[in-house]
Length: 142
View (cartoon, rainbow, N blue to C red):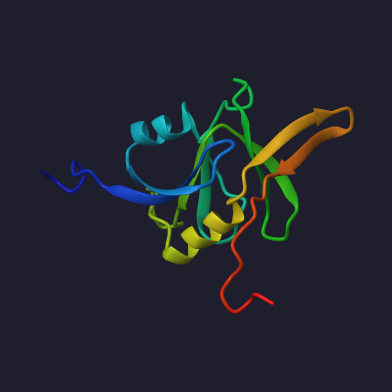
């Protein structure tokens, strides 16, 4: 079996609407990526760290549930992703998706750890972040 025919997996942060993110291994194939997002894939690169959001190209048009607010590294709102999506690395010198580094995986697990719910209003969309109570860190209790 050649290297091209071998199944290769990539480590991603996978996020479904209303759920906490999880680290998953996906087959590095178009079909596996499409299955993960529920349709045709679109690559969106709002960050400056060589990563990309892979989402459903027609998520909003098809009425998929809104998932997460996307902000740039400075906190400016860019978009809202509809449907499930994942985050992976996309190096400039590669034509394939690649596994996140440990630091990148931790960054996006933290960034998207709290599910968000969206309510349309006459003034726009209201974003509700669900932040469950978290246990206090050792050494921080007073």
